[in-house]
Length: 478
Image (cartoon, rainbow, N blue to C red; front, side):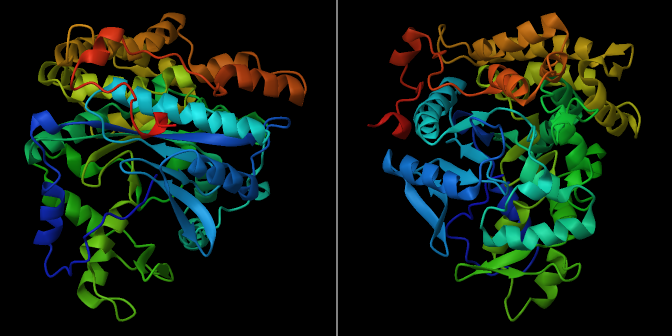
């Protein structure tokens, strides 16, 4: 949930047409489409499995900064993030570490960024007695035992979360996910992709369910993270109902965002708290706040605080996946790229997933958090839908390949194995969940800990293709 504000947006807003134009400016020709992946990881003590505190994670960031080409981002003299030329490493409220990779033309490039980051970060973490887990919820540490990362925005968001929802602070401090960012060619193309991505949300939760634990015991959910998000803040989470309208467009998204209560605006490096009352962006645009008037930077920051399953920033962002073990971390991006960037695959997937009733999508989504791939779906289950969508995605990726050897379907191979077993990652973890803390921690490490080295999936022949970058970037510069 990286929230760096884009540069050069200190422009006053005089009418809502500027807000529509801001979203429309995200359109790109096909040759410029990319995929960006944001990977959140839990940082835990290697010996106990408890959530690591900020002081140790700050040392990790300091050493990571010294190992590469990074700009240190600080607040009040404390390191809170690293910013590269086109990537960033940020901290979530409970100390979760997020890599926001650069926008890549292909997933081999994303894989190179990811493996390069892991190689350096895990080596440093090992020196500090830390381990990264690709898991959707903190397995052991209770909410009150997790200290807040010292960011100004969290001092505003945390108390607000307690007022507006049941589990908002759990979302902030105890969950980790994967977000996939995608491009679009036009307004119609954008909203066709948003509709399909939203229709896929139950499948994404079911297929990548990997958060069955909370506070040291099974929670009753396969994706506890999904349930937590649903009980965080009804104003800014969940599904976007207006997407069901066949001609929905940027103006509809703007109307939705205008009425969401604001957290804050940022001035001179400080966040101004706007949560004392329901202060919508629409009201801010009309009346101002504390002598300040709305700018495009404020709009960009506000868009980053809308946490629906799919959103525009102005890229499309899909947010419905738990954090995953390394072998599966790029599988959600592969599935979405295969379906959303190929017209034939996308049309076929939409025919399969298009909601048939006003309540079908919401009901299936809620069931997916408990039942995973066994969730009923029309005449079968989400397991059946997953098989069909996976085949469509493979075909879509095959048609998108940059050269004969560069087929990104390789990133779906681990999903094939998962589907063949019929058991989600969460069910596999629960099947072995027994014994004392050392036994449970050993199981977790086998299940989802990040090793220092991750096998490259880039075919050698791809290395010679001018458009394919298998990670020869800032992470691999020594």
